[in-house]
Structure formats: C-alpha cells, structure tokens
Length: 265
Ligand code: NI
Image 1 (spheres, rainbow, N blue to C red):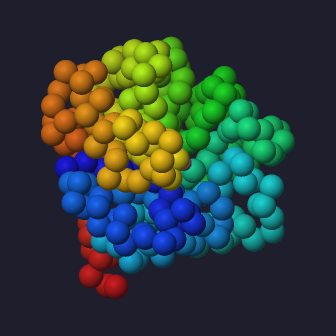
Image 2 (image 1 turned 90 degrees about the vertical axis):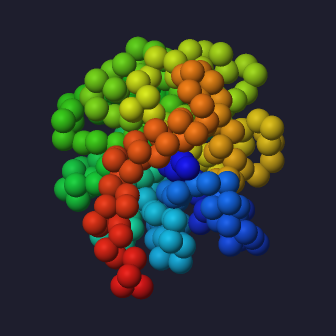
Image 3 (image 1 turned 180 degrees about the vertical axis):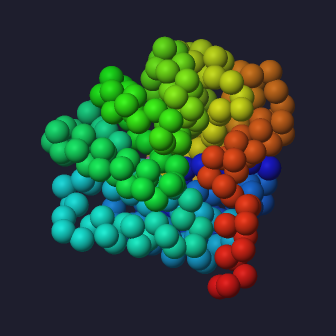
C-alpha cells in the first residue's frame, strides 16, 4: 500500500485509457492518488476526476509555467474549486527558473499570492522548485509556521533539505531517484527522516527505471518506493506504508473530511 502524492491524471496523455491507468494503480496496491492541476482548466478536470474515482484526490493551483494565464477572476475560480469535495491541497505552485516559461518576477508574485491563498484556506501547499532554490527558501522563510506542505520532486541539496524540514515541510521523491546517475539525490534522501518522506510519480513525466522514457503512470510509483526503501534499509512494504501514512497525515486523507463526502455523490 502506498500513495502517489503527485500525478497529473487530468492531462491529455491519459485521455485514451484513464480508467485502465487508475485500475492498474489499484492493482499495484496504491491506496490513493493525488492529481495536481497546473492550469485553471486542468484544475477543473482534476476536481472532476476526484469525483469520478474513489481513490483520486485533487490539488488546485496555477503552475509557474502557466502564471501568464492568471487574470481577473482566476483566483476567485480557484477558491471555489479549492472548497470542492476531495480537494486536499493548493498546487502545484512555485518557481521554475530552468524553463523560464514566464518572467521570473511574475512567477515570484504569483507564487506569493497563491501561498497567501493557501494560508487563507488553511490548505497544505504542493511546491514546484526547479533551479530556484534560494528564491523558494527566501519566500518560504518569513511564512514559517503559517504554512504546511511538500516540496515535490525535491531537487535541492542536503542543506536545503534540512532547512525545509526545519520549517516543517515534507519532501517528495520522484522517479529520478531510480536513475543510475542520481547518487547525489540518493545521498540527500538518505538524510531525510522517514516520517517526512513522500513518494510520487509526477506522471505522465519522469518515469522511474525500468520505464524511463515511457509515459509514466501512478502504478510505477512502486519502483520509486522500492528504491527509497533500499536507501533507508526498509522493505518496499514498510516504505510504502510509511509514505502512505505521511501523505494521509499531510493531506488529511481518509479523515472525516474526505470520507464523509464520498457518500454524497
Ligand atoms: Ni507536477
């Protein structure tokens, strides 16, 4: 049993066979999948999917690549979506200075605004940080104690990991931890306390070995769980159970909020 804490089931890559993808995740022993919106339209689809599949939960937010689409009414629409059933986080939000698809100043502004929204709505955040470690930390530091959440597909060094852990964040590990050349990442993972680790696929992206280069899907998270377990000296079953418990705790899954609403639909 484990939980894929970050996938993009709403994306077109899953259009032809989404039911089968969710079915394979269940067969692989997953207990839940959090599907994470990146545009307003995809956030709406993510919330729909959470309504359609018992094991799927949604997060809503505007990805740093997409912040140019934010206009009048975008945040009002996000707030409404954030209050829907089985929406468990605000994300994915953050900074991407690798692709730089939006101006950096705008990314920073939109990241701050969406963090404010998470505080206002009392939701955990799912943070995307690529090549913007110093800026991300600089934005999170003054909000210490007022936000909770996860740095998804964590790519910082051990010092950054320590600071994020110190601020109370969880760190999520994705498929790259299985890649031959990822020794530095594995070393960072070795130092993360197991009670703060999450696992994810980021599907359809970042497929773990032996699927690297193919479309990723939530069932493949078991490969990442196994590799992280090896690093931590734990079995895949133990690692899966620990990361599932962590995800449940952070996102409030299987609690009154999530379960009470299943019956309504
Ligand atoms: Ni993602």
